[in-house]
Amino acid sequence: MGLVKMVNVIIADDNINFATTLMNYINETNENIRVLGIAEDGQKALNFLNSRYHIDVVLLDYKMPIYNGQEVLERIIEKQKYENSCIIITGENEAIKNISDNKMVYKVLYKSLSFMDIIENINELINHKAEVKLERNIKNRITEELIYLGYNISHNGTLYLIETIYYIYNNKNKHLDNLTKSVYPIIASRFNKSVHNIKCSIERENTEMYLTCRVDVLKKYFYYDEDTKPNVKTIINTIINKII
Image 1 (tube, rainbow, N blue to C red):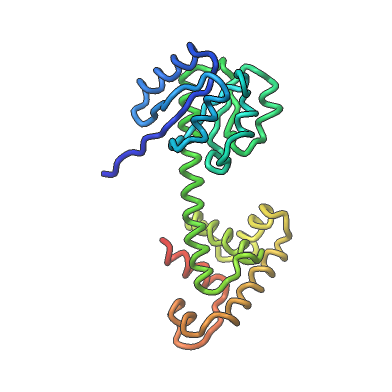
Image 2 (tube, one colour; image 1 turned 30 degrees about the vertical axis):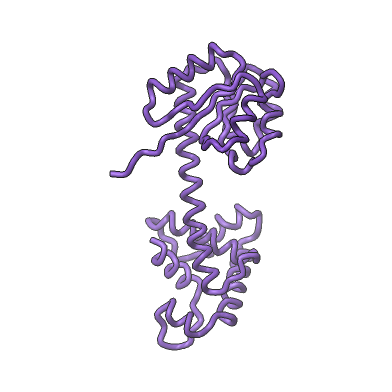
């Protein structure tokens, strides 16, 4: 049995009584969540966040001395590291208006919530981050397979194909034989494109791949005896079988 990953949390709040009580509650009731420390102002919060500490979740008060929550997020050096990692806990309506669209903010909560509700939101965030990481890993594996075949990942058609393969990978139990009717409309809505545009872009990239890929690579990859252009369904099914 593998070890359960410990989730590291910091609390940034100038109400030390609230922060300490919340820290004790988290540490005493959740064996897989650990509060690394408390920052009593925006500068101390930045010291944590810009350090080498591995921090999974940030509970960040909006109204603090030196820097408020919004100013803290603006001064974080490695912003991508904390994308969707911050839960703002506040009593200020201003916070929702000013900070809810920030990419580092997962959710804005009111301080009137119970500690149990805060824990539930932490667990929700942890699960969300795990899902995002899994999605990224799967899409990276799909991309590696397409690069091996010679697809140009800077082209839109390849991006649409990655999303198509990922969607089918996650919906194996659905009847997906007709890509134009059952899959391309979903991909088209994500990119605000027409179904025709999605289909033609993918077909164009497929043709470009066939014209540039070495024959021996193509035959070995798809188990062909002859030089044959694989159709889109064959490409999708073969890649999914290779990454399962």
